[in-house]
Image (cartoon, rainbow, N blue to C red; front, side, top):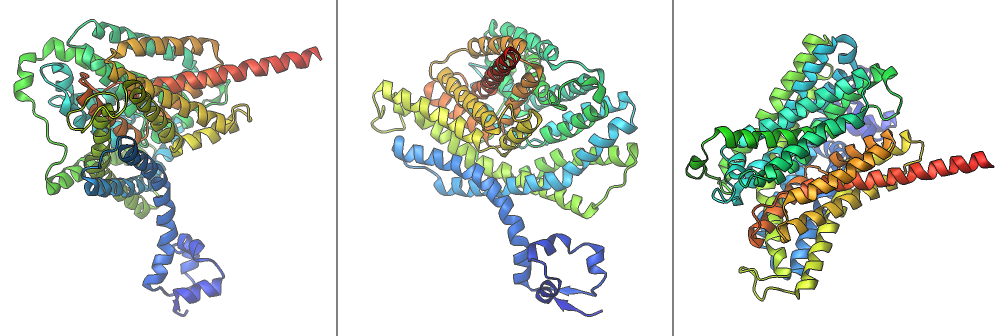
Length: 568
């Protein structure tokens, strides 16, 4: 055996450097060499394409949205960007954090999800599967990057005007997160029971939706509870992020694959994301009712305090690292125990999995830091300046900048294209479009899926902004929207129903959620609205309606063509 330099190894084996970088650890390759020496430049050549592809993926999502906000502030609102250096560093931290987190998720957590999803329905009893699914739903929620946004969302809510909302976002923020997690847990449990017992998704939608609308209407009649409705419906959007959806779908598709005889449609695994969007809403509303009934309201204003957005750098970094570890490590330990003790499956590639878990923790830490210092600051800043387009804002000289009608039109156009562009850039939407086109044999084209969902989100954010501008009670918007969605659900084929209701989960990624929340809170703070919640709620229901309409159209066209074929 002889020692080769890395460059010689490349030349002799006639492989390009990228291929070698993925196969260097193959025992068959290493066994024929004592040692492979490579220089620093060689190492860079190996790592560069690996890092570049992952950097570009997040760069294409984060930077266009950030530039859209910055250019709108500079060119349309004609205002300088304050704290631009801090915002720039924050945006950079978000890109790096998401890049690390998503890669860590893929190599550190997803192998657990795929193994458990495949073997658990085969090796474990049904009751064990259901218990694990419930706990998995809870753990995945705590690991969602966007879940921490809820804590910052309470900083502009007045404890005098909305004491229960203020309490749920500050003093009882941990209970709010627990309520959301329990809702997701029960959603995953219900989704697996749907596959096991062959239930249709349509009845389950109404079983979840009707009580949620009922408790929302009840809360709307109570001045103290009415303020929590927007928060609750927005929480349904927060739950379906990059951790929950892949893990839940892995288990769901695995269960659906084992119990094939219960399924007449091809969209196996669809539906759980729908339930994970609805049940947390009910859980948060129920928590609000519970707090009003059993907690001392007179103490809220005295005992609650909200931390500033920008804390000392050292403490903020340490807090975010600890939060990330608390979110990721328990979930990993739970998944490891399930795989090794219950399924008795050997854990392969331990070093790579540990590498992925470390990336998850570091990535979530960097993402949260960037969120606090960058995207939330930018979103809040732009949101607080937008009203100056049509009304007087104390901090904006010469406001209103435009006549009222033109200023309002600018706000509406801005809101629509923010939702449309942000959704179209979501990688998960592109993946969904490809999947749907394949399983519907081209009846529902990928571009149609992407356009219908993106337009739906754009319209939803537009309606949410209108809600804040004119201070419309959110219940007046949610109730008719979900009634329309319910009617369309009844008359549309189940495969399109599954797609439409799950598509709402694709629209709310780790960038969209905190950005829209920060934008809404800033908007509400200046415009005088009670809170900035409700935008995400509308951004979730509107794509459901738009996809259902497209599905109904395709359904009608197919029936017409079939009828014409018979007549010929």
